[in-house]
Amino acid sequence: MTLERIPLAGVIGHPVAHSLSPKLHKFWLRRYGLPGDYVPLQVADHNLAEVVRMLPKAGFVGANVTIPHKVSIMQIADHVSDRAILIGAANTLIFRSDGKIHADNTDHYGFLENIRQAAPDWKASDGPATVLGAGGAARAVISSLLDAGVPEILLSNRTKQKAEGLRQEFGSRINVIDWVQAANVLEDSATVVNTTSLGMTGSPELKLSLDGLRSGTVVSDLVYVPLRTNLLQEAEARGCIAVDGLGMLLHQAVPAFERWFGTRPDVDEDVRQAILS
Image 1 (cartoon, helix red, strand yellow):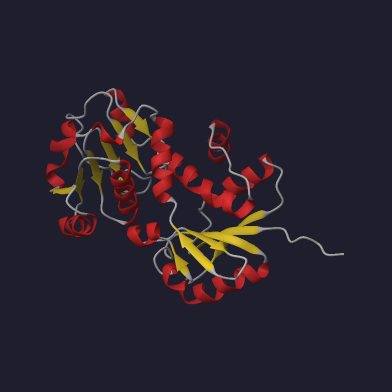
Image 2: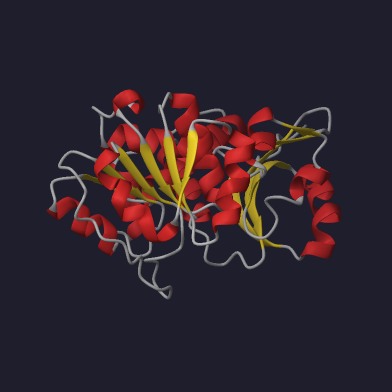
């Protein structure tokens, strides 16, 4: 008698104990009554290639990739999606039946779906978007906003040179704004996104005057610890639509879970509460 293998997935990082992904995927596996498991995998840089290539042989169907491996994993994969190449990082691996490793980036999808769920009337074409930060998260956000049809991105970063580099990569719809001038462009923005760690528990606050924010502006913060950052609280008090960062984490996991376990999971309030509990 041949026993069917239980599909396994996990998250690869160093460190990885803080990741909420195991809690999320295990919740979905239970909800849909699916066989499978999802585990944290702490892997150091020098072991990454060896461990990743062994995972399919151990019954793994895929894995998420987090800090510090999201760039280096692209050199290990057999195939890298156009989206991951554009963003410059991969966060999702699919182990194919032929043994090939496919790397993708689902942060692009997760960011947009989070905005659309939290602000159903949002349209990318409503006006310019201000993006704060120029790191890996900013690359995914810029890519998704441009694809969605934002007419202009006003990009500001504490190190202006990094922002200029992204403008050269992503094109003429990006205008770089000096960090000290960022508050002055908020009144022109239909969307504002903080991709920095400023405002996160243990990090300095985001010092940005929000006086120019218009009521109805969609303000998104990728930080989700705390869930309601000072940026979001103040934006909401000014009549803006506040979009927290937890939703992006949940939505970016959807396409990966579907590829690995064969069921497309829902992101709803029960999922949010399960992750927050």
